[in-house]
Image 1 (spheres, rainbow, N blue to C red):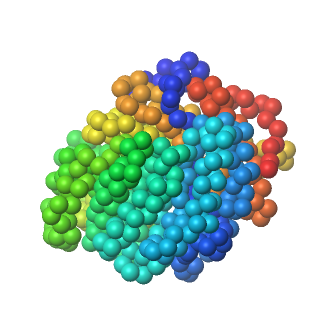
Image 2 (cartoon, rainbow, N blue to C red):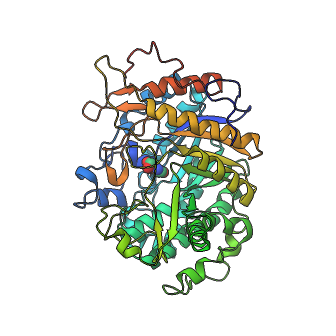
Image 3 (cartoon, helix red, strand yellow):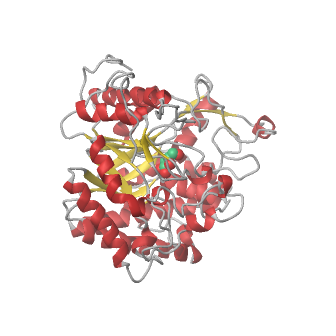
Length: 491
Ligand code: NOJ
């Protein structure tokens, strides 16, 4: 990977390239019982003892539901050119079917208008994991009825906002919804079943395909994408064919199955034999794959860390006594990877973030090029960032140099990939502000703006000032640019 400009600002992001930041509804909004919002599976899950660190919930979160106007002002002060946010389905349609909630729709409509007023391009994610609880009561993503419900919801949202919003995401990280929510049980709805992981995955993918067609039928002006988190499984020993096979299998489960159906109407071949002891895949009905074929305009990549895997028939012994396995799931919990009985994720090496994740811009760069090669579609980096144990210094500053270094390396990886031909259209930093980090509650901070959870005050970290320079210059400043004089800034 070339990195000609580390420390200089010679290269710039191309015209039209969207530079922004991202958040998600349950992670920031709060107002969980206000404005007619119905309960979601995350309200239920976070109230289930033992599921979220410290018993945290999204009831208040960053209180964005009440502070959205000031938050948009903050975005404008930062110079964001784009803002990716998600709509809480239960806020606009409390039970996931039937009546829509005008008050909830008005909340997002006002948000969009204010963004546009400030010259910030909105990007909507329709589903960032907060399924209406009433739909889960009827089977959630294991039921085909949820697919129909999602299409109705997606259609209505485009009817409401399609005149003002061009960039749409159906699902955020459907791998997490299925593998972690239904397979490992570490996320809502907290099931732990290999086959359910695959069924829900297929239903999520099919929902995207159907919703895509319904949304585009309303207006062809919108661009509808699917956001996938990536794992970058590389073989532990590249010379060992079994390790290479293990990496290829995880790649199919983690990456390829989430785009291939839309490119050529098939699932990766290794999946059926790899899971034959679990399921015959009869949950894939005739015609499903045809519906998915061609149904995407672009792909979003959420990237955080890289992964090394190996084949190990004695995996059970290798991981005995380990509390958290290297792929992040808890020992004793079901694995998020159906058919991985002899595949082991190896512990990350090098410097780790507060999540215990490694820092590997090279793998990011390779992954962008891989998705470009395999799909030929435009790409948006819909999330990228890192969590650190930030501290507020005596002078009020948060000197989060680790986060700045991380952004510096990964933004350079994006520019490298662009120069090598990948059609990357945007980059959204994760996250605009600290927020509810799912099963980790408020313990992990990803924001460039700090949130004090007692007062809900927003405080610019050094990374916010640094990213402001990126936004202003459309280039990548040196890691210590613009930081010497940063005054504490709060709102
Ligand atoms: C991806 C998810 O989309 C987001 O909700 C989460 O906070 C980040 N990863 C960090 O874990």
